[in-house]
Length: 136
Image 1 (tube, helix red, strand yellow):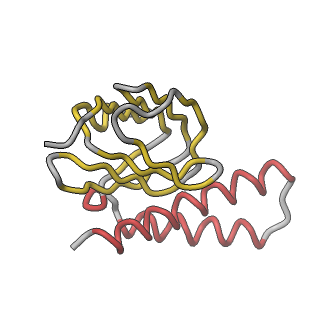
Image 2 (cartoon, rainbow, N blue to C red):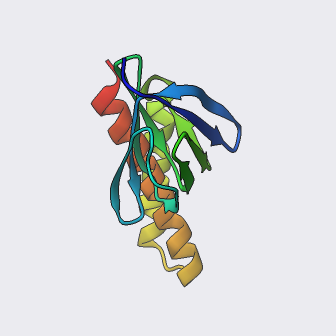
């Protein structure tokens, strides 16, 4: 049996996952980050991206939005705005959000509005990518 560490993934609306995990791969602000039991302590921010973690030898995938991760040798805690399994993603709603964001980008906006719209587009595109890649 592989060594495990405790993983807790907390989204703004729910506790997404709590339990032992063998391996975690997540997109961090400066690239992919792989976590195994005994990892050095670390805190970093997370952009919108894909999260995958191994439980009982099986990989689980999720779409995750902006957040933070704290890693200790025996534990990792992720705090994120949202986290969804591929089968939980409403593809129609994600596609509508993508279209709205693309339309907003075509309009004249303040710098702040532009960045907010770009973030919304990134979230929608990530949700669509994860649902298409992993949902069967």
